[in-house]
Length: 299
Image (cartoon, rainbow, N blue to C red; front, side, top):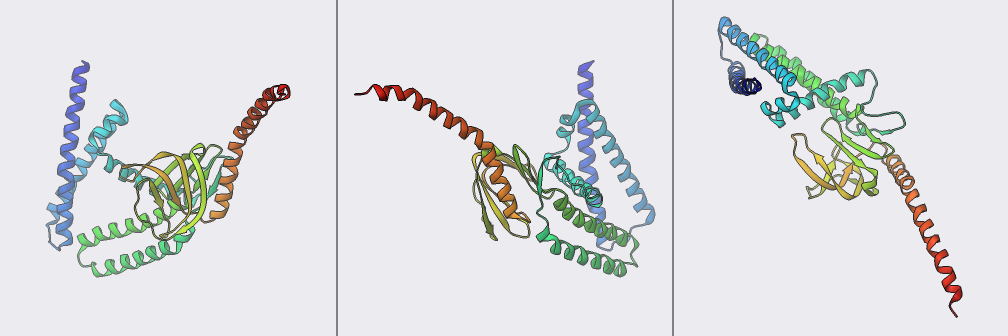
């Protein structure tokens, strides 16, 4: 019975992969034809889209069933990691809009210190959004005589504007977070790295505008600049947007208030190391007491 269940799941895996291999190329071909100005009969266009929507519903239902029967591991067998990560990134970006509107921040608990990093990119992001809105209006006017192309481009342009706002919202609502035992450095919804305080060797203010790729170095620039450099005693694993892992011992990041973050991090490191220093002094004092009688007996 169990064997038949596993066989059924494997069969569902194959079906979902097949649907993806058919659905995605078909939609790309249709989009290319529409953008090229090819006039398709309304019945054909409606039929193709109906089939596409049906296959998409089957795909979503199948993935939900896989998750119910086999958990996230079963879904991972069907959906490649880069695809999962891209979808997850866009969901985090869109979810950040809700956090931004409600003035909430992600991952900041009571007692934590939050340090923003979005201020220096705000003007650039708002400029891109403005240009995108102007482009959306202009294309809507130019393509008004081609309803199919107009609908496709309007959706793409509006979604692009929402995505740009979401990217900035993610930077605003996902600040760097300093807790009692770790420093969480982030770059919007793209990067999220947790560094235990015990692995931080030093932190220094260092403003950089050029960042050459180097082994063991993670650069998290905002508006093409970083303002702090954190050196580690042991490497930590940084995971990229598409899942690529990197062992890093140096992290360069940007903060709206780098001096405040540097001072708070230094204070947290000193408080964490204070008990160890006191214990070392107690051990040294005990050793001195043990050696004192020997010194007194020495002629």
